[in-house]
Amino acid sequence: MQAHDSSLISRAFGEHTDAGLIVAYQSHQDALRFLSSALDRMNGVALLRGPTGSGKSTIVKEQLAWSSRDAAVAMVDGVHLRPRRLLTDMLSQFGVQTASEQDEQLLHKLNNFVTQQTRLARPPVLIIDNADRMTSSAQRLLNWLAALEARGNFALRIILTGKEELSALPRQNSMRNLARRHPATYSLNPLTEQEAIIYLRTRLIAAGGERSDKVFPLDVCERLHKLSCGWPGALNERAIDAMDRMTELKSARRVPRIIVSRDGVTEAEYELTERQYVIGRAEIADIIIEDTYVSKMHAMLQVYSNAIVLVDLNSTNGTTVNSRIVVKSVLKSDDVITLGRHRLKIADAPAISEEMGEAIKASDTITMQNLDDFRRARARRTVTMLKHK
Image 1 (cartoon, rainbow, N blue to C red):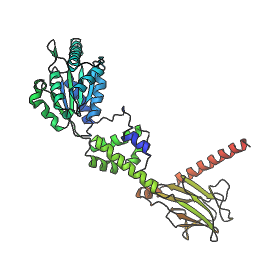
Image 2 (spheres, one colour):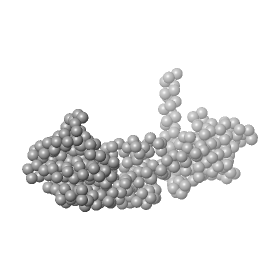
Image 3 (cartoon, rainbow, N blue to C red):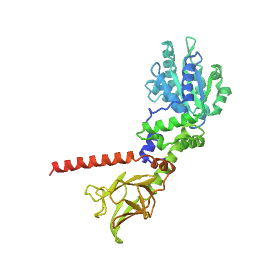
Image 4 (cartoon, one colour):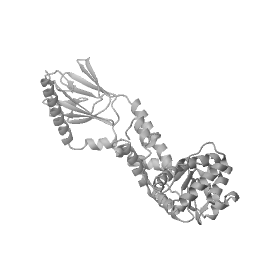
């Protein structure tokens, strides 16, 4: 799993996620169809249940966007909700101006608005998120709102979200008007393992990440799905934790180095921060070894996060690692490359992964292609330098 900066993590799964980024899954889509169907019925009341982090808020916000095309919509957070805030929030979102009126005046304004809209065949929609956490006084107001009618039709369509105990709300004595409307109920289901893979990778790509299959390989996705039980909120948290850990590991990992010496005297030291290095006697080499036994372009180092690979470039006198002639070799810390009278010692090399081990067994075609690209790039750079002289 690759590491990424904190801003990417936040954009993909944290507080800076684009509000418009929605990765739909089966239960999400089923819930939207349920809400639309429930609002179209004469009783027009829907209860959406699910644990914390199940995506209820995301779903009702998407429903709000759809419903607002045809009717006035108000969405209120039910946590510690009191009657006056419920009234003022509804009127404000319905576009009804208010001043410092008493509660009775606010009720009168609200009643006039919803009945007028219902007569125009546009009954407003009230969404209360976390409705199971309202105060008892706000519940009584909701019960009053549920009884509003215009010309024999209910004047307000209602969506309530909450945890499993939300189902008990209409059965309370103070909620009889709501109960008479026979609310429809839908319980959200978690993402399947396959849906979790799509969810994680899609959010990362949408946030600007690359190679999402490398950041979230199948085994990591399966682990995150198991830990989160498939709920989107918990999946986001687990993804953040996993990516943070990889970032910490990357920052703690020491940069691999190569130390060049001749006759026991150190001549140069290079931090291997680039993807590839050409070793040779030519001036265009990245690591220049001034030794008659070294070819102009003698060998190439390919640097990966999980391995350093040395490849001989058909040199005249060959390349030796730890006193053994090699054509290709995976380098470990303290390995010594011998080129003529020079010794190149590897320090802080990363541990090789199984995936890289398999890749190294492949053909040298990619290596030679990289060398050709290197030559062309250096040639272009040389031409550019000459033009500016």
